[in-house]
Length: 360
Ligand code: 5AD
Figure 1: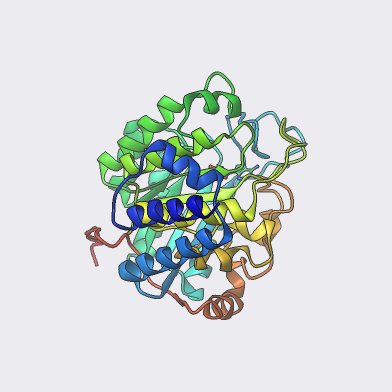
Figure 2: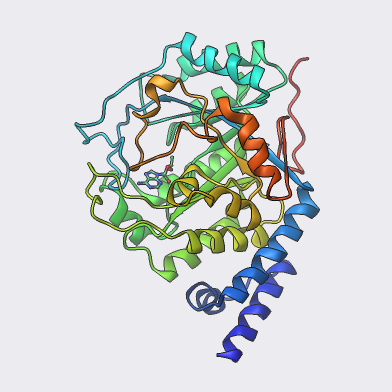
């Protein structure tokens, strides 16, 4: 046993030194580590995040503007085939009101997230982006609307969108096919991510911890893929079953595993913007604080109208009215301060990113 502990610390040290360990070393670290190893990892992860971003925790206002989706991912509660989902779409005016409210609450990043809803055409989203940018030129807009054409991504970027979140979900093609129907592919999803980066977006990838059929090899693939892509953001949260999906009876990913992955990713990508996700806050009451202590530096409170919050049901028991609600930023501020970090307003761009001209 002591040998294993020493080996793991050496692998962690190598990650800290900027090296990419071998597959077997990473696999051992993931599958066989002690609590002491985890504490050591988190300590170094905090050092690295503090070197990059100090004690700052950035907040993003999440606007879940449509739960219509053309896809049928087996894990997701807003999948097309879920006839129990109560579908909604926010009007342009409702989206703007969310941003205006968010602005007065101190948010300077708005994340427009939705299912793959083709009602929001390239042109329609361009109009929405331009409107928000005109009203709030000091704010960043993040889009998270799935796999679309290159020309859509380009047009939205030219309209003023700054960032794009598209989790790769799993880097293993074989695993991808167990989580998605045949019309979706890991290759296409990765291609979209490379396109987004190429266009100039601050780009976010990511995956679920503990999704059905995930093996240690899948996780090593995920870490290698993140290292290769070098995304500016990485969204990592536990899988949580949703009762109307094919994965209803599966068990959730664990807090422990998610935290450990956050720590590794912080060392692998020192400057990455790494959220302590809503899903992490859903599986444990102090999940997001623990995420911050493991290397995360972003939280994304919900800015959607209260009337639709329980309809954006990606998974069961998703939290939406406590301090993850954007309206409760003071509560959130206090909880973040208890971890020794400070909630800051401001765009919170990727450290080395040259900010786009806003026309201000
Ligand atoms: N559990 C956890 N995360 C989920 N997502 C979708 N369904 C679930 C679930 N059941 C995540 C996916 C998606 C993001 C918006 O939410 O990773 O990319």
